[in-house]
Length: 316
Image (cartoon, rainbow, N blue to C red; front, side, top):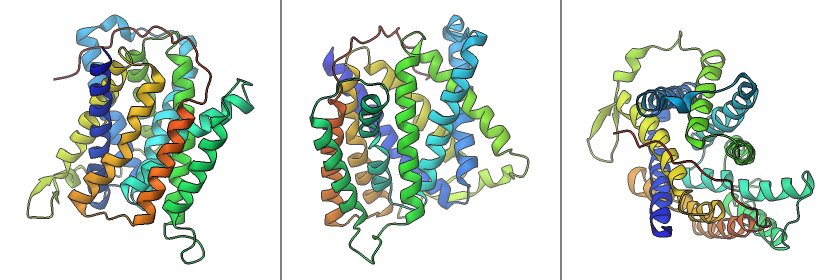
C-alpha cells in the first residue's frame, strides 16, 4: 500500500521536524546538549524495552556476537548523531542545521563508490555539485568573508551528516539479518549506556526538570520535563517506529526521498513557533540542496531489498 507508506513517512518527518523546535526550547532552558541527548536516548530505550517486553519479548533476544556491532551502531549512529544535531541547532536555525545534516545520502553515494566499489549513476556528480552549491548559498559564504552562520554550528551539522551516513550504512547491513525493531531498541540502549558513562547524571539537578519553560510567543508555559518526555516519545520512539513501518509499503529509496520534506517542515515549524526567519538566499540554497539529495538517493544501482519483519505496535 504505497499511499500508507507515504503517509507514515511524512508523519515521521513531521514529528522529527517538530522535535527540532521542542529540542531548541529545551536547550535554551539550560539543558546541555549531552544531557538532552542522554535523556532522549535513555527515555527511548526504556519505552522500547517496555513495549517489546510486553508485546514481543522474543524480539529482544540478542547474541554476544551482535554486541560489538550494536555498540558501534548505537554510539556513532544514534548517540553522536543526536548530540551533534543538538549542538548544531543550539547555534543554527533548525532548518539550516537539517539541510547540512541531510546531505548524508550524498556522502553515502560517494562512500559506496570510492570504498565499496559499487557502480553509481552519473547523476551522483550532479548531486554533489548541487549539494555543495546549495550549502554555499545556505551559509551565505560571501558575507563577512566567512559566511553568515556560526562556524561551530556548521561543523557540528556536517559531523552529524557523517554520523547519519554511518547510521544508514550500518542499518542497511544490520537489517539484512536482524529484526529492525529490535535493532532500533538495542541501539538506543547502547546509546543510553554510552551517555551514562560520557555524561553521567550525578551533577544534574533533577529540580531543573520542574522549571517552567515558555513554549509559545504568548504566555503559555510548561514544565521542562514535559518537553523531555515529548523529545523521548514523540521525538524518537514514535517517528522511528513510523519510519520502520513505512518500509513495509515503500522501497528505502522512495522513503528516503519523501523524508527530505523534514527540513522544509522544520523550517516552517521554527518560523511559526519561535520566529526563526531564513533569508531568501538560504531558502533557495535549501531547495538546491534538497534537489541534490534527491539525485543522490537514486544514484546507487538498484539492489534487492531484504525482507523487513512486521514492526512492533506503536506505544499508546
